[in-house]
Length: 76
Image (tube, rainbow, N blue to C red; front, side, top):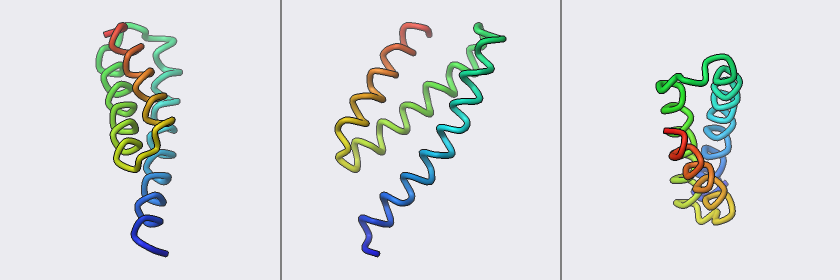
């Protein structure tokens, strides 16, 4: 496995973990929609995902995450 494959593998592992936490936070927002702390965690997770997708030149994922950031910015 070359270095690029390792980086993508790490991105996939980290993304799965972040998506699991993101899923939990989004479900929890249903019962506590005013939680600024939780909203901040959701935003940071999507921001990190966007940054890594951009670094890896995964344009479609980067644009998707950017759209998510824009929506969350409106909620903030």
